[in-house]
Image (tube, rainbow, N blue to C red; front, side, top):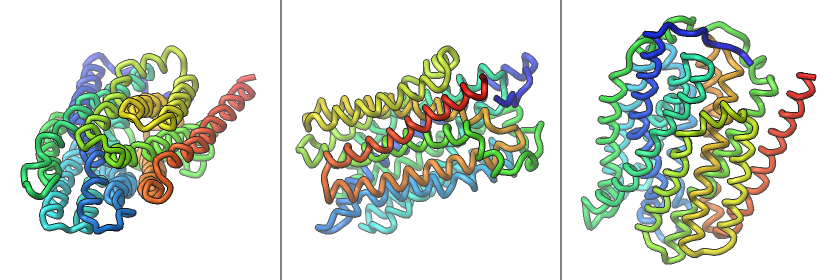
Length: 408
């Protein structure tokens, strides 16, 4: 393990904790874009398309491609202008994204709608940096908790996003859904005001105490077994979650369960994604990262089993809840493992590469989900999740075995 931070003075520690709470609050509004996109993206795509609905989830995939495409630029912006200024810029992009997406729905442009969600995803890459920013400083014991605090902001996002959908989707009737995408701009403005409150090193370039460049070569860092395990488990947790989550609203509507139940199902799912974050950091500190990641992979497996057991409302909702909790344990554990593998001066390039690979894989899973749903159906999608989870579990087991051998 690389100890990247010395113990901070008491005043600095208070600022670190304050920044983590600010980022958690900002996450509540920034992360709310995800539930809006997931619950309405596929349905809006289907509305804008003709009889062929095979590309209905392309806008959702565009959102995730945007996150992947923005991962490295977001990290570079942070390194160049500092955390606070970078986050303000990210929220500005989200404002534009909401306007583009909402207007495209009004004029019936599927291409414009896809571009708008891709821009929202690009802005989402900056939101993904919140967890890293919270863990930039503080004691080693605090960093896992800081990540959990930021992700816990998603609990509020789980309510804000779906309720925004329900309250605004008919604002421009008879054209559905446009109001919800315009609302993204309003949420982004609130997020902009929140991140502007960041203080301390978040206001400085390159975190204040470390150079923007330097450190080991990227190839040397990524060859570390622990980096490989962290990356594979993050990809496995997130892609399996994306695969099932993207198709779930379409499947629920296709099964006659209605759009409101689909939106509420995503709300329960997002709550399950982020609510465990109040305790995940503590669990990691007590039991270790590997057991928490393994628990997450088990829950993801159980999720697919529940989804395969039937197409009643309870099956969908219970599967989505298990999917959220499994993702939380797997992804938070993998992120906590990742931050052990780099030094302060290496964080920008490592964080950018990690998120690019993770969200590139997630985007591919999302796009595949729409195609699979229109060709082979909901049941087959759940079967596809098993090998993804199995590969992650095998990598985790081999990594743990290697750690024991090196320790011996």
